[in-house]
Image (cartoon, rainbow over all chains, first blue to last red; front, side, top):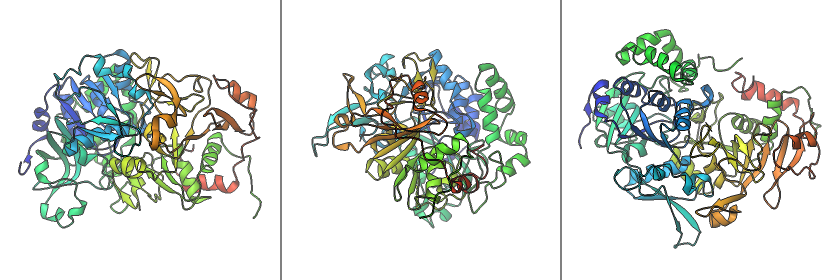
Length: 325
Length: 267
């Protein structure tokens, strides 16, 4: 406990071990810790176990690199800029990763239980679906619910009859407590207080549920500034273990009030994600072809980045062309 | 009341958005997904249902976007919102607690009971194709009072049985046995409703007392028989009450000039 340690991007990625259970900040193509994900691929992480709300471009970068062993989630894609998570889909069809589907609100329930120190969280959402079909308990089928991995619950879910108000059956979703929450945040104080702008997704639940937390911060600001309006803050500094200050660290995903989603970049990645060869070429250019985040930004170029920069009042770019008109 | 200026000058996607917008009652609390659902709720808000409110899954409650969002996590969703929160708020603080009147969702495959698949083709344990996955579709659909699905009409998408029930319709498997029972039996006192309409490029469908889909109206240019031919299950067309109401000039004008002037979803 205490103040988080300020480290470099390379040091941050080096902390993550093969096989660790990870979760992320953000939502689909918004506020993802992309720079850290790229660095993990550069450091050739393997057998990662992801537990996450709706996945996105970061998931697909890791899937294409063959870094994922288990993916527990509910959705992956790039929104309007790529309709499928091609890497995850290909790996699931090939059988090279274990996919365990929950519904989105069930994933949230698992994170809530983990965040609040509860063994489970109840939910009546998505009952009567094949998500609950016992035949489709993929970690169970793989013999991984034997208690040997403390991060994998003994059952995919449980059902109880409400004995208090007699409302009927309700699901119990097991807590998720990842080894790491990899968070991209808008601002972090010099004592570690975390603030995100606009929608907070499940960022605070991810921070609380994880054993250790790395925050990639768009900027580090004086804690005294953040403490003037504590109601806007997401997490206390003692909940954060490591901080990396990294402007544009979420690119190509968007960061409210800093920059918009780089739609062209994601479209190009999506096309590349459709085959292993194309992914390898893409990764040679954008991941292995640069040695640092700064080199990556240089390669993107100032015009591209300036075009994405958010209008400081509206919170998004007003100069990008988004549609056909 | 002045006569409506109906127009035949529209694209199929326009009619989808207009027909969907007409499912909104003024004052409804609407939970909408990305794409056409966004066009539908925003069109409703600027035309027939100014008091309808929109919730987007990623955390914005009653936003007043002045620029069309491209996804539910978009900054634009939260512009002038009453609350910019997160998924715990939208799924539990809004949906599970019972605020949501209407859900607008999509789907890849549907069966006659309104069960929707957005997960895989083939056996889940060894699928031949993966779609995006559930996302919040089954959550929103399981506890909204009404759900409207907006889909593409194809024989392979309107199936006797979907390969995987991602999102719950009216007749569902009760686990662990898998016996098919009415939704009310599974949801008990949590039951709030279910799919109320399916809108495709060919028609508008609703569900009867037994939870079975029937054709309610057919879009101009198609016949009920053509719709039936584009379903793998035996579609009930006996209750079809005629053609879907045409869009009005005002609705088309609002769609192209107010809702999506940049041409994000409307080509």
